[in-house]
Image (cartoon, rainbow, N blue to C red; front, top):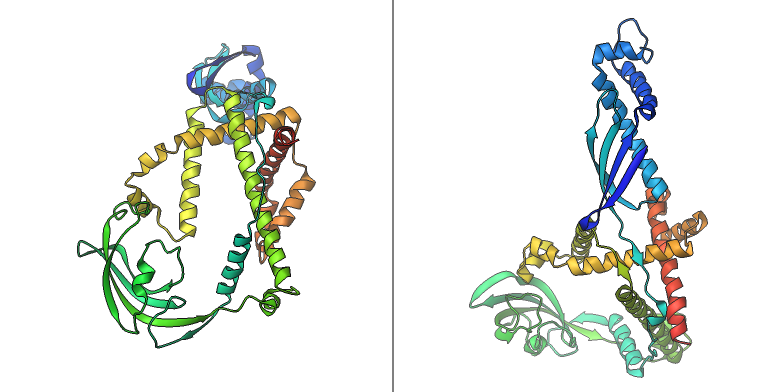
Length: 432
């Protein structure tokens, strides 16, 4: 077998192959057996008819076509394995010459993963920021915890700042109600300063049960709904219920009611530790992203095939749709707010898609260079950790045991190892 590999623009690779007539003989013999098994040939048991009989019954080209299909699959796989070609998907095969008594020649067009030349690690500078947990953050977390454990009771007095209220709400723009601008049995915590329409809570103060009120507010300029952002909106509310909230006092008794804490100081210490751990994780993630961004800039990449970019954009689209669905949001309405078509939005993902692809290529290159792999034991341990998040893990046991899921976890684990290698190599040295 002779072959020639040519790299083409756009990340494509062309493989031209010629299989001599002598090397075709075993494939032709197998084709005859296969054809005689599937076509009834009078006087012969299935699979036992000789070449000349099958040729006379089905035609010699039928034998060559059957042989070519098997020969192409096998020789293509041999070339890919021998040359260690990191192919993407199935190849496009074009038979250039197939005739009795002649060599078989074909062309395989395939995309390859781009090659990566890793940048100089010594050029990457990532410093760990000092982590501090401020006292005010601890106090706020304590107050929020107390708010979560507040008791509530219905009252018939006017609404006060510490209350939770239930209202019916209608919103209008130019006296015209707009889609999504009405809500019944809507709860509002009047002391919540994070409400997304500034001034709204204040307008509810002093309202009595059954009382209605109309007012106008300017929506924030950064509001997600671009049709309303920075514009005046008319509100009509009706007070339905008022709940007086009894927030527990922050003392030793409260600490003991929360968990196994001796006193309030012990609870504060645990909150401080939790906040420190959370901040440490965020700082670690920030360092990883900065490290990978710099490594991308210092590394050299072959041209990224368009098929990779397209697939990554589709993956990002699906991730977004799933995230929106989990929040009870509709993707089509999300696009309406952005005033973009799905095609325009997808195209806008191209830059981030390329960045994600390059990150994956870098991690893969490091895994190959450092011989990083995930053992079956490590995969099993990861599955056991994941099972802890399921109420009934036996229902997912088939998924956990599937080869595809094991392959997926192997990728996750080897990526982690590559990132840890980089962090020790780069961030560890930077912070010495």
